[in-house]
Image 1: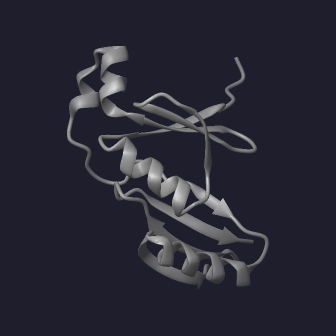
Image 2: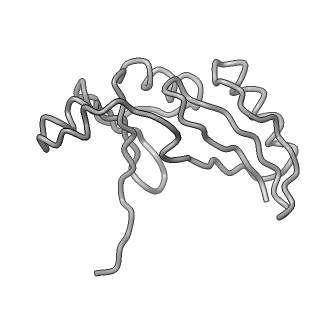
Length: 128
């Protein structure tokens, strides 16, 4: 088998709040909304928000009921140039993203800013 990621799902206890953030702040539109599972239209890997309850109901694995703690993943959003990083970062914060780290030039040449969604997942906006 050659592994290929085809879907990324963010697990949450508050689907409504997370969907609102990913629609209103990041600008995603939804394709499939069935209460505890919302899939967004995205050019590339499929992307969804899924309730931790649904994860448990489908698997019966107690880890879905465990309290979430710490950063477990990051989404990185590419923009075409370094000036756009600052502009998009400011727009995201104005729309309600939680600021984590204002954009800075990284030692490897990228410009990167960090922000968080309502569940505290830290994501990156960057340009090469």
